[in-house]
Amino acid sequence: MDNNPNLDVIKPSENHNSNQNSLNEEKKLIKTKKPINKKLIFLIIGLIVIFIIVFIFINKPQSNNNSSSNKDKDSPNTQTINTEYDWANKYGEYLLNNYKDYDTYDIAFADLDDNKTPELIVKYSLNNRNVYEILSISQNQIKKTRNYNNADFYLITPLIKKDIAWYIYIGDTNYGTYTILSELIAGTALDSTIKATNNTEVNNYLKNYLSSPFKLTFYEIEKKNFMDDYLKKVNKYESDSNAIQKAIAELSDNYDQYILEHGPVTGQNYLSLTSFKLDFGPYIGHTFHTVEDKVVSEEVSLEIIDNNIIKKDNEELTFTITGNTIICSNGLQLNVIGNNQFEIKDENDITTTYNLFIPTEESVIENTEES
Image 1 (tube, one colour):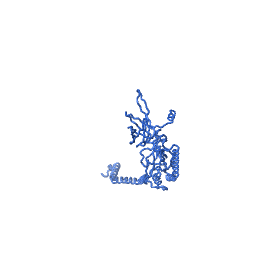
Image 2 (spheres, one colour; image 1 turned 90 degrees about the horizontal axis):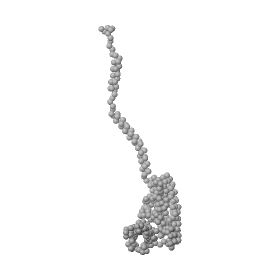
Image 3 (cartoon, one colour; image 1 turned 90 degrees about the vertical axis):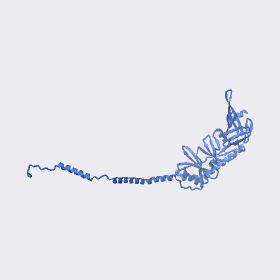
Image 4 (spheres, one colour; image 1 turned 30 degrees about the horizontal axis):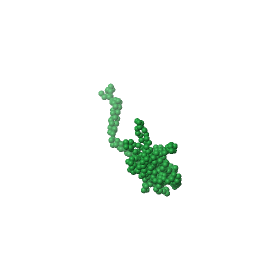
């Protein structure tokens, strides 16, 4: 049977072997493929976190440098100013520490309160307006006034007596107020010294005061050239101070000349109340009453003669002053509501406002023609 040539020998097929080999290969792959290692994942995450920390740490010094720079910007400047004047050294150091935000500003020195130590006036631009600040030295410390807009500085003396002083003017080319700077710097100024807020007050100012045309000289300070600019200004202090003294002397001469021409001014020519003052002279008011169903205006007048007498309807009255009220000997009361302005209330509770009468050229001509 073994030698039967007709008997086919059964052999494994090639396809079967091939499939078997593929299956074996897949089993090998399955055996070699390992499950995901969680420790490896944590290691990778840890490396990433470390990288981020190192990156932040590397960049942190730059942030600290910026912070340090800002701190230096806000911290007081330790640079010292060395001039022959102790007051100039103090003002200079104050400017360095307190005016860092201004690329340019102007300064002027003047002894505004006559205490032998000059004040420093700082002028800078803010919102297209000139702003003024006045620095002074008290008990070795720098003091600063509040800010002033539209300001100017004048040497003025009242005509009642020679008393030349610095005044600050706040206003425009037409109207404003004058305040004596010695009181403003000392903090004792409760109101402006001279009011010139209307034509009447302006005429009163021109009639009772003399002023100098002298103007303070301001010098520009550039932040980038502070030391050079400031020292140049300080070095000009003596010449500027001499110019001020010359202006004071000229105003004094003008005062003497005025008194020579117009005669001496004796005594105070106004009543002084708590908040206001009333110049001696005539005051005019207008009352209204009905005549034949028509409202008619009538002019009434009153005259302050001096510190003792008020004349009303040809009657001379003595008076006393309480606060801003004047009480006359006949019971008449003047309630003063402003400089050279008061109100009188009649028996019908009708109030009439009186204002100081200032003669004009027309009224002078009319009076001359009538006489």
